[in-house]
Length: 95
Image 1 (cartoon, rainbow, N blue to C red):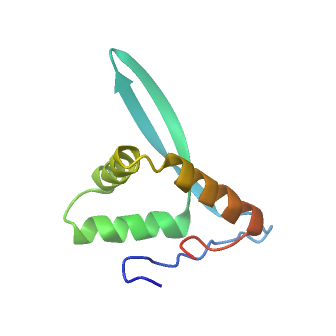
Image 2 (image 1 turned 90 degrees about the horizontal axis):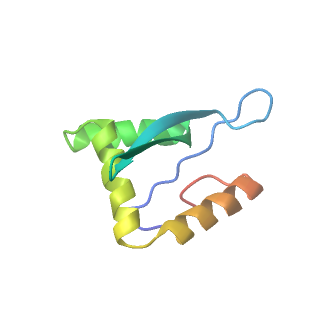
């Protein structure tokens, strides 16, 4: 495993379902506004909060930078496919 990767185990509720929370992303473009809910596992959100604290920024700015980086590097297909396969397999994020 590379030093810049982290293994984040997914938390399961007693029902066996993922313990998800969500963040709301507001996108404004040419006068239009759209609100998008993004589901996140609580452990991943905690990891984002910790990273934001180390970077001396708020979690919203960190997530914004992550999404901008994904867009600039055209990584949407890679990120989405990996998330789909891990959700099907129940594998931890980052493996």
